[in-house]
Amino acid sequence: MYHEVILDNVGKVQRPPKWTIHDNGQEIVQTVNGNPGLLLSDTRFGYVDYSGTFFISDTKDDDFAGIVFGFQSNRHFYVCSWKKKTQSYNLPGDLPYPRSVARQGINLMAIDSSTGPGESLRDALWETGNTINQTHVLWYDPGPQWVPGVAYRWRLLHNPDSGRIHVRWYQGRNLLSDSGNIIDKRYRGGRLGMYVFSQEAVYYSKLYAGSPEVTDYALSFNGIDDYADLGALSDILGGSSSITVAAWVWITGANGRIICDLPSITFGDKGPDLKFLEQSSDDEEDWKLLNKKTPSGATGPSADHSTGSGYYAYLEASGIR
Image (cartoon, rainbow, N blue to C red; front, side, top):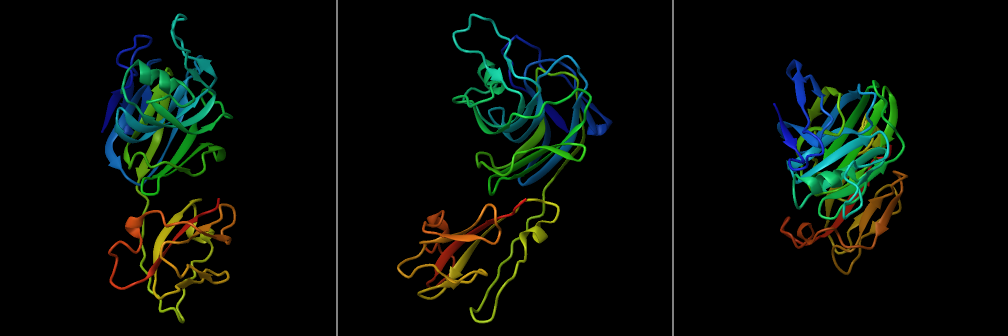
């Protein structure tokens, strides 16, 4: 069901983590103050909704615990970790390079390591910042400290197709930290798990991972009396707070037109792929017509989508919290 990945099998500063699994995976405990390590599920996910609860019973230490997702290998994965207090890494004082500094707060990183497990990756994981050939910070919240004995809940949504990553941390019903929508397309899904670094007595429970339903629709209009009213995005979203809609519209005729509950918009008469619509980030009724080419020529009129001539417009919409 789970297997361990040690991220520093060279350094002797600390021991490797020790994981114990209870009740068929319903509770997982990490008991050692040790080097960085992961405990991963065997299942690979694409689009995933990953949630769970963790608390730390240790009252003396102040280091890292968190989650991992999009795991491809011990060189390539995402990690979201929480550090209680700012601290330099405990290394000898005669180093030829500065010590890594871990800063208080929650940190979302893409691991893209040229070396894999070892001292270089270990030091980069401790650093709250980018490290060349090792780590890339995608988001950082410097505010919250974790408190011993207090249970926290996370919820992660990762859609590899769009690259959207959204992670939230709660205490009870209170939202403590929210990454918002982060776009990163490095890793197209992967395995999930737990992460610790130099922190003992970490308890994980109520783990859930599932794939949200994805539905595609195809519509055809005659341009005279057909239309589609999607309503408010908040009605579509329900309990979720974000959605991304992307569609290719094949517009026939020399001057294809689109009506989007605003003044009619012409997509140009001199050539295809000239413009596309983009929804405002703070007003779901505000659309802008951008004078840019569509994102990829492979999906425009040059691709063999159908016979005949036509114009293509790319529309993108994102939900509002």
